[in-house]
Image (cartoon, rainbow, N blue to C red; front, side, top):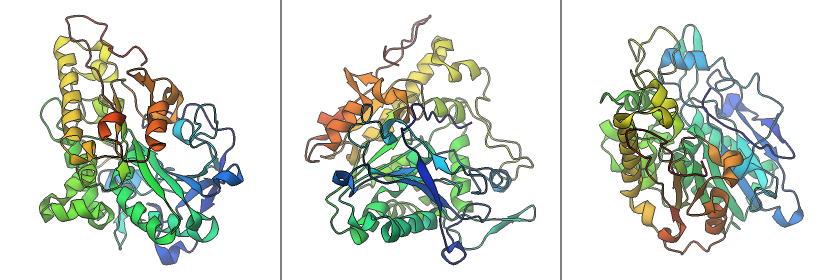
Length: 409
């Protein structure tokens, strides 16, 4: 539904742990059920103090009716969560495909608050006789508290924070917050860094110049009371009326102090359908149905948005323009060139590719995503960012295809 490709699975599963005392902590899903996480311990003693923390993705809900509908799904309630979770790519425990992180303690933070773990609203919102809770920040806090108290996170030495899609956005939004929390609870930590997957969603109009996605994200920011659930430095940099913009990766990224390595397509398949060619439901933000935005709705762009090979010359030029806008949004920040950082930005029309087989397949300049992350992670974080930066090619924009410019896609 949200374009998440779990791909090659891990050899062993992570087990579900629901949070306790949620009536006191408030760390609950949209429907008020306890939030939670999946956990698998380190594979050997050598990695006992090495951790990989992963934010799950799954889109967002944008207004009350949308969030009400979501609250009856696994993205808004823990009642139907499976007892185990298994992820591939950067979260795999297969050391052939994921040699750097395969033996780490692995934590899959389950997503159920509707706004990338950023909601921080005290009082529930009643919709159709049901209370909805926006408590993403409290979910982060209680997961970290539980891991510290019961699972050994207090002894962490090396920590990678990651996540995909809405979880990739969560990685941008919360990297510095999680880093600060771990500095407090894990005094022996010597390395902390973040690698966001497919989370750099643009503050961008659709093909008709309408601000559909920004309008949606502004509304959930306000509904969830996310002001104090985002990057504090970003919030402080914007006037109150524009603080909702900190719900976007480009602004959180610009204020991120921790070392960070974005993994993203510049022509992400979710973005072409649900940002660039999307429309708002009727009467938004007071829609009567539970539509979760209307993706691939702008005529006559549907086929092109689903596959660039279907684009005519005018359309592929527009897609290349979106890729250019993506790179400008990322490159304009000092974070992009900060020593110790890097990025793997490619042109493959995919989403969440780094948690599936493409982790070991997609290449830029002969280097796979896995190899690029490995080189960066095993550096001392003093290298120039340019030495760890990989950039995309543009699609072929002639009268006819093929359009693809990267043969490894």
